[in-house]
Image (cartoon, rainbow, N blue to C red; front, side, top):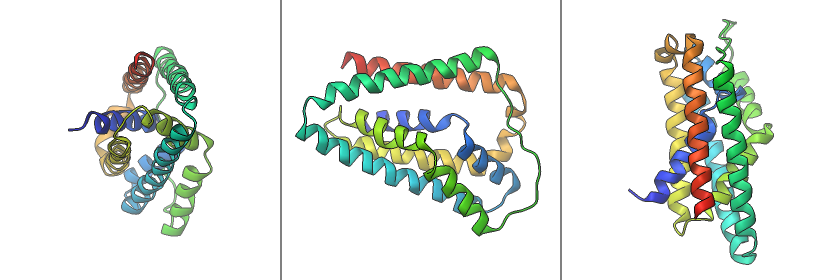
Length: 199
């Protein structure tokens, strides 16, 4: 399998693995078994659009402005180091369980509106998918494979989270599980940052 594909998969998977508002909503929908397919598909397709924008846009920009490549490479590494440090700090501080409080069932329309808001109104999604993934993709000759890996990670993650939610509930009821998760995310981010710095 292409190294660029694997790198894109690893980076994107690590970026979306951290539990945020969007992932918490997908997990909650999975636990309730409400509109899981459509929620997961919406998240994954949204990511695919943003990733494709980043990969295509940064490729063109780097060809037009070669000086941009080292700036984005070091900037991306700095972001990954900081992002990894936050996750490692969270692991040290202690994991926090998600609030999975039960509520009334929601309609498909309401669920779609909510997940679209979590996805497209979150400024971090643009930083992660368009800017960071786009910048890292510029390091690879086969940017299409890198982008394909990133998109695949998004589909695997969201559908895995949505449909695997009930299986994960007993595990992530324990705060220690969140510590392990945060530590793994932080370590992955640092490894990708080191690779960027030594390229």
